[in-house]
Length: 173
Image 1 (cartoon, rainbow, N blue to C red):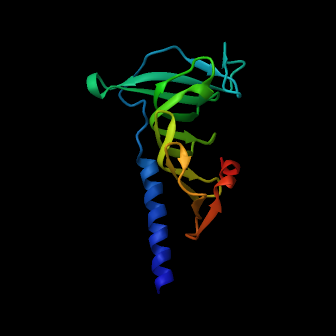
Image 2: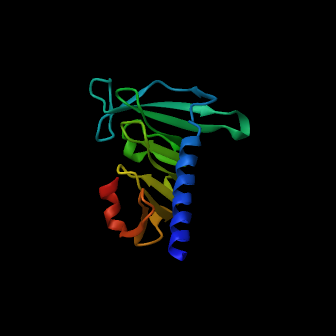
């Protein structure tokens, strides 16, 4: 009985996380583009045009006054959303130096959500979720940019859970 209840609870949590990710609003809603399109190569350096680019970025401002936020949207070259979120600094020469600040979501080339989490001045903070290609969800907890544990958890599509060493996380990214 206890195992069945635990399994039902885990499946419910995964379902709620999935529903929440579909209900997320895109940052472009009520946002105004404030800069020309920025093109980046696969190594995250800026390139002059879309022939050399791996992805491109739009910078926007959302809201006004005290509630104003600097937001971005990155797109794969076919126009599919690659990433979106808030930032405090964009390095126009090398995107690896960009400082994210606030909620950020990344997407697979097929448009499905990949990563979602919050950054504080460029460092990961709180729980990050990774929607895995085979349907499971991985969760990692960060504090000040570092994983709080030497493991992360995966809830598979069938409801089973497992812990994996944090070193394996890069393979899933």
